[in-house]
Length: 128
Length: 485
Image 1 (tube, each protein chain N blue to C red):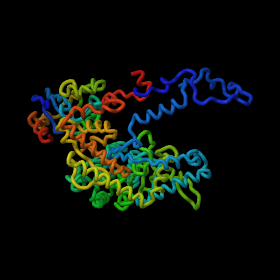
Image 2: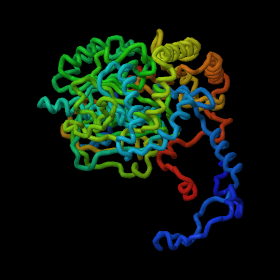
Image 3: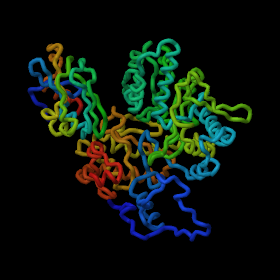
Image 4: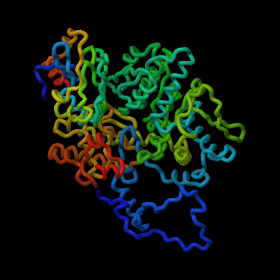
């Protein structure tokens, strides 16, 4: 299972890449494997305000539909429009080309509540 | 494609029946129709003989799986056998040729059929008021939650939330969202039933309704249903029964006695009308008296020996279906009810429960049951053990197709890892149940000896494993799409 060390994680299987005030968000390798082939990703418009661990979008996969949660509060400043044409990027490249949104964080301190790679691996260990 | 289309089979000059020569004076079509209505070219119909047409459709009918071929154990979907008598009765000319725009005095027979069906269903459900307008279960849910909003609205506050257990069908939260309420999810406890302590914390004056499936989607009877009703009613919320799993209860227990305020029936699940293949479905919503004024309009009434549709329903949530629901389906359901009778219906429920428990007992050593103990009409296994050998629930389902059997429901309910949800229904014989169990046990051995065989299944079907992701992303639903693709 691929869990990059430099990223932060949630128990709901989102990853977060912190760059200054911005948080880039996607779903983990484990999550994409469990969901199976992703068919459609519904994301909010740029400018939408999102709150910590509230749903911000949905992911339609062959097996099921699941919510994407906001790991941090703030404002959506970018969405990955490439996913509209090619949702399979979430499966093929969950941590790079499959990113979903960038959030301008309202409170940087919120990132401290996120899991480290080690912490997330423990979550996965408890599931398996 | 294993079967050519009728267009591909067409040969110029081939004919089915030949018409006899005209023995009356010919009248030019140009004189009978306005010029713009007269076509200048013949229709592009395939030219083909009758036996070819018959063979074509018989061949097509065996390319897909259906209940007339073999067991179809889709849990919670209840793919039960559709007795042919239902179809014969529905084809009686007086019923099949009735038109919904006929005046009421010429529709009394058809209205009597609906009235009689209402009587049977109200008795089974233990509830006083009913509509048979909705097209299927999800539309019943929508109708019910719209009625809940109207009911609370009349009391001054439509409220904000609807509570849904985490084992519920996806249509429950979807309905709640459609009506504009917020979904509050309550977890299941270790026994697979609603966590009563969590439910107590979740209810409040904001709760408009609680949607419960009983037996739930794990095939377990919610034994605390009385307490659940008290908790919901304690805050003035309405209790809704998702009747998807009614097949385990008919004639044995009634939603009315369990204090449900409204409850739905899927005629295409519980009362043997066609399910799958376009149906159409048949949805029935039963309600207690306080909700009666909000039922969809018009409502069927009887005065003496005469039936009438009452359209004067100012508090109704409105129409939910054209005319009076899917009438041909209502006829089939009534035929099923009358041919079984009250004692036969209870026997159906007992047989459904017995068949499910027999299958569960045969499979529980190879596949991990979601919960120990007896089940109702269905049960859930987890393919977690098989997953550790590199084979998933999806693969197991595909492999069953190679044995000529339909897969169970997979990946539902969501709270069970690699779920296989199995509902054999009452009509399968012991031999059929054994064949199904033998197949799943053989597949379990294959996951040890040759997992790749299972991962690459199916191999004996008309088409191999389909690309489900591509089908969902770029659906081709007509032959024109295929030609274009």
